[in-house]
Image 1: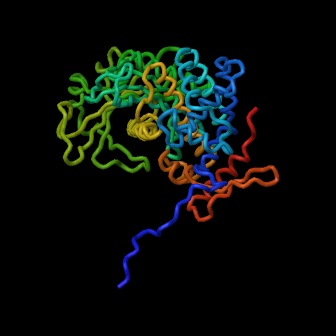
Image 2 (image 1 turned 60 degrees about the horizontal axis):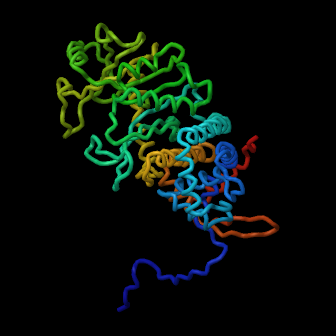
Image 3 (image 1 turned 120 degrees about the vertical axis):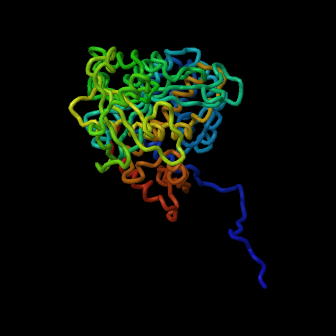
Length: 458
């Protein structure tokens, strides 16, 4: 009888390997930085904070931190994996140098944050231009989703407080541009708040919406072609009035809390008025109907607001709420979009759930925790996280096609960015030789070829 040898082959390990590059697929992100001009824009924005005779550019340090986060890092010290691969990432600052820069930017406060945000806004417009028909504004409309995120803190940090979910940490409010069914999305706003910050605080929603609009190309910062979506946390008089303010004229689709007045109106809706809800493919949604409320229920709200109610049979095991009726789960939202069927508007509002996918991606990209102690430092960290998410959104938008463009950060890292390669120097050129047997080598090389065809910035 032969002795079992185990399920996996045994290999000998040595530590003297040369010309081998880990995370070789990260050249996709580096090329995205180069083609969009993000490195030049961040360097120019942070030039006022570069000290005389400094070796490292502040913009390069911040961008290196963003690349490390995009590759899976969750603290400043993770730029060490970039420092180990200087052939791809160039000279990378030491951990103390990076930490001192974050302290300097935190001390500068809003001035430094505004500089980074302005650079991101300029590059975003250029990235959308490069994307052409794959850009999120191809349909003539830009959709911005606002939603809150709970970030748990396992240590005592500034402004960390108990949250409404009985955890401890912070409660940032974020905004994401939706890329539609053919893509993912990119962050355009992040407002750091204490853990006990209210979910329906109108002032915070207005501030976040301002930050989001400032990230969009100028022609989308006002007008009906920009749609703001959020859940019932944004269903306040102040926020809806701000969205509808004369001269701003934004489109909105905002969830509303079912109060007693709305509940009584729902009970009076005749059965013949309810319209079947629809799915994305145009087919009727099983067990779901929509109707529009009119009359005195709209008193005190901005002119042109429509109130649409959705009822649906709850899934098995779900507990009904006091605002539900006749065994149906009742939800409600407000919009100022006219001339479109209410079933179509309800579907558009229901697709706001894609923001949950963006939040999941953000948690996997540096937002699982806030690694620094002071609030000012963590505000800078949020900008770094957004830079990382921008790169992970722009690279697929510019270089990937098909299902690969829908991959979230974890899958991008597993299949593309973590690929290893052999580094060969010949004829004063450095060549990466990717493993031929790696299943996604074709996607990497094809994506690099698409990036190479894009014009250089400036």
